[in-house]
Image 1 (cartoon, rainbow, N blue to C red):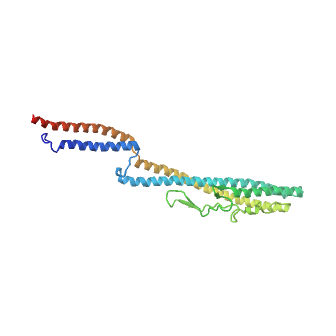
Image 2: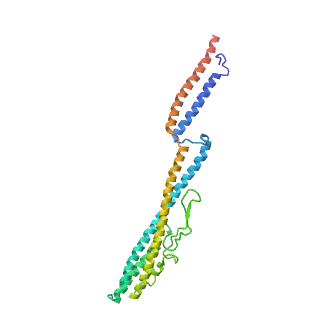
Image 3: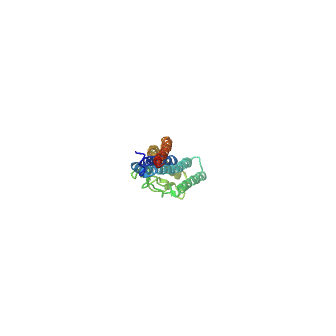
Length: 284
């Protein structure tokens, strides 16, 4: 480019455009270093921004599903603990009924005393059924039937479980604890009635075992689903990081390079302006 042609200033424009490009690259590097993100605006990666949003939504859904699983597991743990207490009461009731069925050595008053203690334990079962709740939801009072309930266990709409069969103690289709209710005539007064109650206790023990096994199976299923979601969280979080997070080492290197180039471009721009001033020599 001729030094005697200065009206357009082509040399200065070349240097200026180079400086503008370097400043833009430097600004991008600084933005990524300060935010820690590779994609700060859609223009940074038009294709990647859509993938990133999808991955973030999936990650949020996975974490919400984990909370659902943990809360449901806690609920079942609470129900199982209450059922374990019912089991302990049934063991004592069985012992009392067996003792009361032996009128060979016991008087009527002694059998009636055993019957009253038996009835107290039946009342305890009633109280456990009425007071076992998770938040406001009754678990064992006959109103907490979760047979039609749905548990969302994943990020997608199809990731759900249903049919959780935890029916209250007072439900007619569940355990026959209504026969053992403290409000019913469960206090035996003679050996014959004690023997009848013994049969009811044995039935209740069998049914309680089946219910606790059912609850345990659901707890294991929830635990397995939780482990799966935790593994999914790691994988999806890794994808989000790969797509959206800045490689700080690379960006710092870019910033150092662009800083040097910016200084070089500035010096070149200054030099092009100095060269144009050579024309003034012709006027002297």
